Every structure is written in C-alpha cells, then in structure tokens.
Image (cartoon, rainbow, N blue to C red; front, side, top):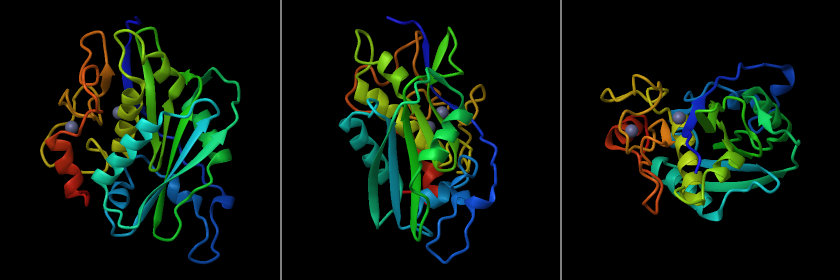
Length: 257
Ligand SMILES: [Zn+2]
Ligand SMILES: [Zn+2]
C-alpha cells in the first residue's frame, strides 16, 4: 500500500502561443484552433448551455495501451449529459496515439502532444473537448503526493492514466473505473468553471487552501481523491462522487442543467 496523497488535479495555464496557422478565414466551417486554446474555465457557458453550441464532441485520446475502462467512459458521458444542455447530443471519438516513450511529462509537453494529435476543433454549433490519457507521470509528482489529472485549457485536460492504474485495483485501493471516472469528471468540472473559475459562485464555497476547489469533502470538486488521512468517498461506493448543491447551483446559474 502506497502512502501518498492522490491529488485529483492541478491546474495549469498553458500560455497561448498564437500562430498564423491557427487561424483561417475561409467560411463558417473553417477550423480556428485559437478558440480551443483559451484559459481553463473561459468556455464554461459554451459547454453548459445550448446558447451557442448544440452538441459536444469529445475526442478521447490515449497512448496505445492506456485506454480507460468502458465503465469510466460511460460514467463520464452520463456526467456530461447531467450537466450540459446539448440537444444535438454527445459524441465520443477515440484517437489512439503511439507512445513517445517518456516516463514523465510537463504540461507543456502534454500541450505539444495535443497540438500534434488533436483532430477535433469547434465547428459550426459543435463544441469539442480533448481528453488525453497518457502513459508516464506528471513532473509535479513528489514523495508525498501524485497528480492524477490536470485541466490546462478551456477544452483540454490530461489524465495521468499510468498513475491512476498504479493507485487502483489493489488492496485498500479504489476500483479502477471509479478512480478514472472521478478524475475525468473532476477535470471536466474545471472546464465547466468550477470552482470560482468561470462559473460564478452563488454562495462562497471555494477551499481557501486549494484554490478553484470546493470546500465540501464529499463533493466531486474537492481537491483530493484519496489520502492517508482518510480514504474518502470512492472507497466504498459504486459510483464516482457527485457535485454538491453549491457546485450544482453555480453551474445552473451559468446555463447548466
Ligand atoms: Zn482540481
Ligand atoms: Zn462542490
């Protein structure tokens, strides 16, 4: 048993590198990558409501051999459906990527992999999300804690799948699909603007010691999934943690369900 805190996520800001090939002006259906390279939380309303975007396309990218469980994908799809008004539906497109052989990644390296491999960008009334399951670990891991996922742009987040696997399905460890679903739903929650990160708080509930996270321990948006101080909500349940009433109120006030 490994005595390390499992930090669900860090938030990283990848500085927008605008370059001319990111922009094209060739009609309404041309690809404009810049709209998918904005700060985390800034597209919360676009993802939650059907004002501008009627459907959502999730590009589920993974390093070959690191695809998440079918159960986790199902939990995620259900979660998106429970938060966002998308009458045009939710589509998941898989993208298997060969390993680069790295054992550790900076968030800049993760963004470079996205740049080289992402195939879906907003088009028409479809908004697109890039979810990437990577081999190797975060360069932010320490002896005391490991990072399971990071939301780094308005429509992009990464899951450190190798780390998730090493802390699941063992004795005293959570079930793998539940841990995967917890991390995926949590990172998606940041894209939805939680907490105080694009969806305004209706009542104060931001954790003062862990910015952009909820202060309610049982909430999906709590900063820590599992720790030595207490295996919280995913050890003895068969579903990932839910959003608490405060987080739900924030989403509803920003156009969500
Ligand atoms: Zn987080
Ligand atoms: Zn909450």
